[in-house]
Length: 125
Image 1 (cartoon, helix red, strand yellow):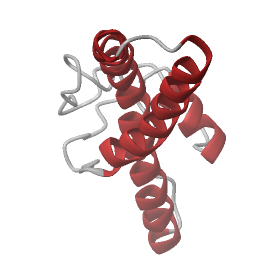
Image 2: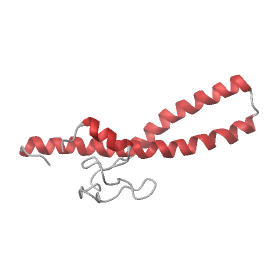
Image 3: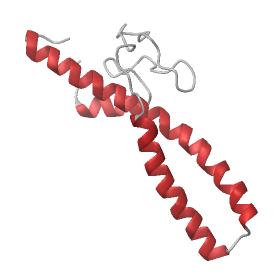
Image 4: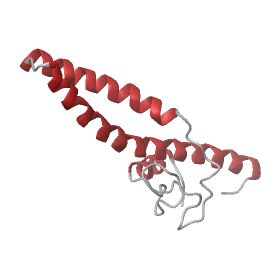
């Protein structure tokens, strides 16, 4: 199977292995599997670091602030209602966004490391 940018991103949206697109990337909520259960790809060598968290914070933060301002100017709810609404909206969205972002970064690392290895050896990984 040819691994391309498109296949890696589609696999990331489904939180699947970037090489075979079948095996799961996560054991639990955000814990990355050591190896793919289908193709035995070593996922432990790929580290997403803080990149996905920063992306989620920036994107979701901007969206939630925009929504909060829209609600404030349109409905003018009391502050205590804002304090209840926005954490209930933000935390689940952050978790839902974090998994595909983390899988996408792992997939990008796999894609670029694999293509580097291909160029060096002249064969597919």
